[in-house]
Length: 278
Image (tube, rainbow, N blue to C red; front, side, top):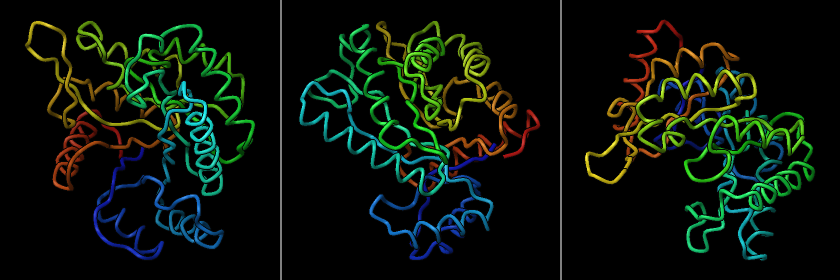
């Protein structure tokens, strides 16, 4: 597998970007350019990544394509199409977004309507529209697993894959997002194994975070830096090692370079313990 995350420092050329990725100790990276980049620029980053053995992991399409607001929904569907085209141009492992939400105030926030058949059907139609507009050949469109919206489990992801029925669809796994109850928290290694057993080769990219269960009476789970929580990284890395060796494990949501270094050091230490290469 390939460890990656955000990079810190200035760069102007594709070669300088690739050197920064290497300086961070990464072999995977988030897409460094936007959809307006011309073909020469795209080509320069493809070549720089190949020369430095860097996998471009993800193009983000972060938005709400199932918004109840028609204008907002159309705008966000178009954004997803644009970002999927970029991922296909640069050969990223995937273009990733959440499925969206019916929450009128927070684009990826929880809403009771999100876990309904009506919303499931809307997700299916929306993803089909996005993929059909691009028909990607060098990448896949993926939905990130989430705690309160589909796909919220390996089984619901399988149901979406079957219903969407497009070869351009694959899987983005964020195991931390799936640890959304004390039961999953206590048995998260089993949940992680289930995800790899059922979704396995369809997984194109994975996010690396961690989670703590609060001691307050009501259930409260907090995202923390890898190594400061109870997510079973020994199981995660062991299962990841069974996939395509170019599968990226991408750190996210940390505030600065020092926190990313500490997270990376922890993940590397676990990798050494279980005998896998990053």
